[in-house]
Image (cartoon, rainbow, N blue to C red; front, side, top):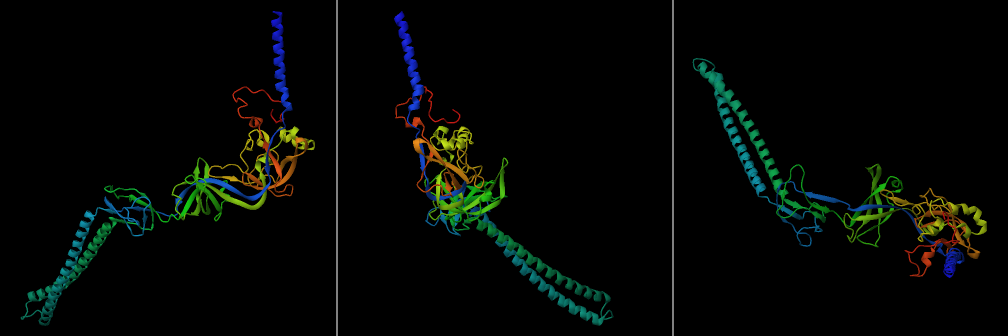
Length: 485
């Protein structure tokens, strides 16, 4: 029993020794590995991101003004039946509506016109007859006036001649009025004929413009009913070689949008391909959704090959400012702040507080992520807001996030390698940013200089298969002294 007791004690001591070695032995591990970035020279562009819809510049909705059954479609420029994507010319037949009813209306109106014209002829003849009777009555009345009431002309006859003359004058006036009425009947009948002819013409649907059929909304045999609203039959884009993108832009960013401003955009239909355009106009009527105000911006672009299809979703970047051939450094290098023990002694007092309590509210520099992402915030310039987000301004120095253009700081700090594996700070002057890199405006660094962009997690350096990710991990001491340990 005593041997067993001593054996147990020996095993416990050995276990404690192994645990102590695993706890404290990591202090002898290799120094921290750093991710580096080079100062480079290139072009920078500050942008505002937004999402919009590809729209034709001008769309014509072709409707029917009469009711009837669709009998047939016309043929397009290629000799095929008019359908989706058919190229049509101005005046080309698109569809034919059954016109039997409208032809009968034209025939009836034509007959009415002829009848009204015959009425005019009859009225003219009646006028001539009335005028002849008036001439006879006038002569009789003139003779009766010469004789006067006497033994040669009885008073009764005298009065009869006078009455006959007056009635003839009235008959001529009535005949003239009948002519005017007959002529008005002709005009009325002619108007009915014109209306019936126009309705008959509406049975033939023709293209009002040269363009491409975007939508065909009827089929042969379908009956269209035109009542208060004209039913839509075809949607024709006037010219797909010129296209627009309608983009809702947030009110916070619309002040940076101006006509003629360059724009780049992509569509999911053509991954990896970028298109260029420019701002045409900013519409003044806003759209308000749940207290979010956006303005529609029209972006104009050429589409010579007609590969951009109407109503595709486009991801746009409005270029608010652009600089050519400037020195720049990665934003992750400006965000990175090393642990105090990795700083050279003369920098610890000034920058140690930044490392202990980073302004971003998370691990400074994003070293633990291994991706250079900003801690606790978006990358420089911010992400897109509702309708569009800006990328501008400069990153904050030493562990801070990045602000919008004009609101960021004009200086920052990057770290370079010094002796004994320590890091030395270099204060730099910064300018605009494109969200990934930031312009350096001073002479502190030159092209090709290497700066620290972050730390490589030790797990990433472990050999493949050497660590079980599901096994419990022992605490590691003496590694980096990161804040919040």
